Amino acid sequence: MHDQFITYADLDITKERMEVAPTAHYTMGGVKIDSETCMSCVEGLFAAGEAAAGVHGANRLGGNSLADILVFGRIVGKCAAKYAKKSSLKKIPSSTSEKEYQRIIDFFDNKGGIKPQKLKKKIQEIMWEYVGIVRDKGGLTTALKEVKKIKKDSKKISVKGSLKYNPEWISAMDVVNMLDLCEAIILSALERGESRGAHHREDYPEKDDKNWLVNIVCSIEKGRLEISKSEVPKLKDELKETLKGAEAIGELE
Image (cartoon, rainbow, N blue to C red; front, side, top):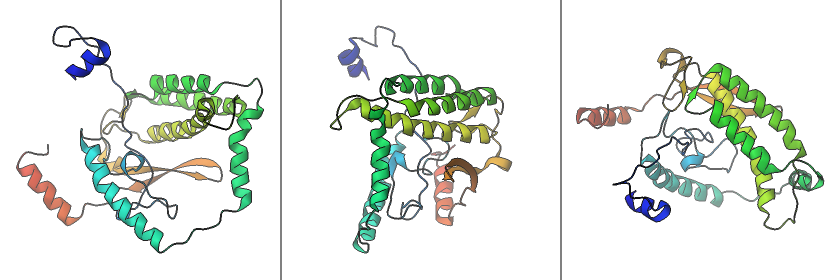
C-alpha cells in the first residue's frame, strides 16, 4: 500500500494524510448455480468466481475470492469438460441470431439520440445515492423510478463509428445490461426487510433469521423481472463438524 501511494499518487502515507472512502468492489449475488457442478439453469452454461452466487452468503471475507476462483474454477473446468464430451453443438436458429444482431446494431440508427456515457453516469449517480451502503424504502423506491426512466431513455441511445472495436458501442451495450442488474439489486433490496451482511436497511436495522434466512432469486418471466425466495440449504453434517472445530480454536466468531 505504501509503495502504491508513492508510485501512483506521489504521497508518503507514513508522513502525510491519505483519503479513505468506501467503494463497492465485490458482488455477493450472481448467477444461480448447482452447488455440485456449478451449472446454471441454462443447460451448458457454467459460472464460477464473482459471476456466481451463493459462495459468500451475505458478505465476503477478505481474501476469500481467491479461494473461490481456485476451488470452484477447478470444479467448473472439470464439469464443463465432462459435459462437453457427452454433448454436441446445437444449431441456433437463424431467426434468433438475426434478432440479436439487430438489437445490438439498432444503436447506430438513432441519429442525434442520447450518448451512452451520459446514461451510464446517471446510473452510477443514482445507485451511489440511493442504493449504496445505507439504504431505506424511500431511497430504493426513488432509485427504481429513476432506473425505469433511464430504461425508456436507453431506447434512444445513439452510437457513431463502425462495427469494429468501438468503445461507444460497448458502452451502449453496458448500459442495457447495467439497467437490468440495477433493477434486480433494487427490487431485491426492497424485498428484504432486514439488515444482513453488506445489505443495510436503515428502516430495518436488525437481522431477522425468523423471516429472512432465505436467498432472493431474480428471474425474467414473460418479459418482466420477478422476485422469488429460496430457502437457504441446510449445512451438511461434515461441514457442521468443520465449523464446530474452527469455532473451538477461535477461527470463527
